[in-house]
Image 1 (tube, rainbow, N blue to C red):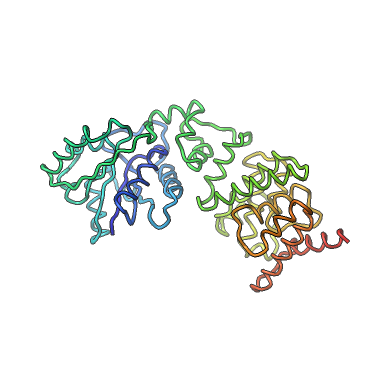
Image 2 (cartoon, rainbow, N blue to C red; image 1 turned 90 degrees about the horizontal axis):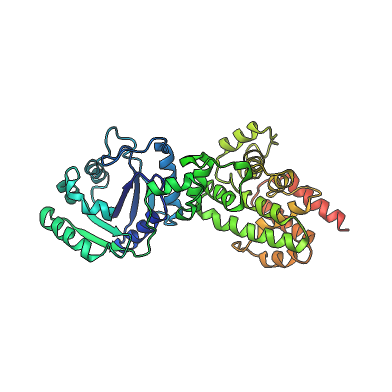
Length: 398
């Protein structure tokens, strides 16, 4: 197995880190990429008031997830668990023992590559791992890399690969932190990482979470879910806004509800029920056991109490999974947008999409009928609100 090792303070991890990591995986043909946040880097002091080790680890996890390399990219906390300075030689010794039959590659930027001989135990580093250096500008090319590559090969018998990526995001984390404190810099970050920074008030952002603009609200939502869920959230937003314009609903409310509708999707049963207790949400017998029914309720609470959304958005998120009798127009739109947004692919979805723009209630009835039939086929109880919603629509349509 070929393993890439990419260490750093990741304070915060930005798009330059992500692009370099993704390119290294492709060029080296890596089977695994380990992102390793440093606890106490030997070459620099972490700035005062910086993100905690746990927060940097979580941002690295978000970066790994948003690389969209499932089964390849993952975070390793080996340096955060080790006391003292985070020396690369020590980390490689541990990883070589952990992966004894693997080929290790150490990934680094230009500055680190050009000073490798001054690190602690460079001969051990070069013995345990190949060196892959990536440049961020056209100046970081052969003229700069070749002498150092030759020196490392001749001095330490190093295996060296160098990659120049012109146009790669070229910003230091120091400059990025300063920009974030001034309300700028989000273009250098994956939205999920930016959202995490906003939600935790890192780097002097101090955002008012109850009055976020749409891009900031999206970022916060994306930071709370797995990357694979983001296309669905984007699709639901797109569909909800389109349906709102078609049926004369509040487009801004539809957009904000869609952005947040799945924000608690990945919380487990214990976390979901704890939020329900915190916000006074009473659960019936089925809901106490069925975690899939809870994210709509807890998501609605997050929307209202954390992000300051109004009652109509709260209700639209609250009922987007089960529906209910006598739904509001916005509730209907979020329910059906979630059901048939562009990434959905199942038998009957095209008919659902057609009906949604011709007869919204008919689309709702069809969606609920399909849900009820699927639940019964699987031997799963149908929530009483779903049955009540279907029956109410059936009765009021004559």
